[in-house]
Amino acid sequence: MDSEQTIVNRVEASGLITLDLETYYHSGERVLFDIKDQLFKGLMLKEKDFRAFIAANNWAEYTGKNIAFYCSTDAIVPTWAYMLLGIAVEPYANRYVFGDLNLLNQTLYYDALQQINAPIYEGKRVIVKGCSNVHIPVQAYLEITHKLLPYAKSIMYGEACSNVPLYKKK
Image 1 (spheres, helix red, strand yellow):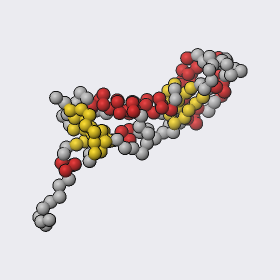
Image 2: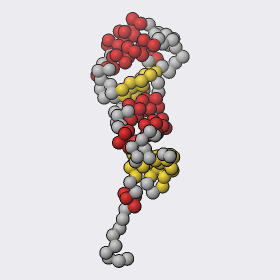
Image 3: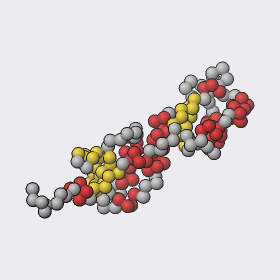
């Protein structure tokens, strides 16, 4: 090899922009909050007792956490009960949903991806990174695709050295 020859990073020169969804992962603790223990005889919710539980509970322990409220038993739980829980944790929790941890993760990613200024990808070749150290829900990949489609010149999945072409603007 000639000593005057320079090494060119072809990946860098390609103009590919790597979008790593892991950077949008909210690191706050995830909590699955089951209200079954607040049910009368495991069957239904009594408003007076539930309101007393809400008033007595230390909701500050959920500061910065992400909460998925649900009921693990087949019980009669009115919608307003979950609304009361939301009101109680609002000053403390980062985010809360009704559902499971998967829905909570999807919601956290949805919220984070809404902050992306998609027009900055106008005419760009974007590769959405495939490997991650955290669980990224499939829905997050669909959401980023939805945001990029009107702007990106092309969208790929994977790594620069090994990617799957998904979309190319005509």
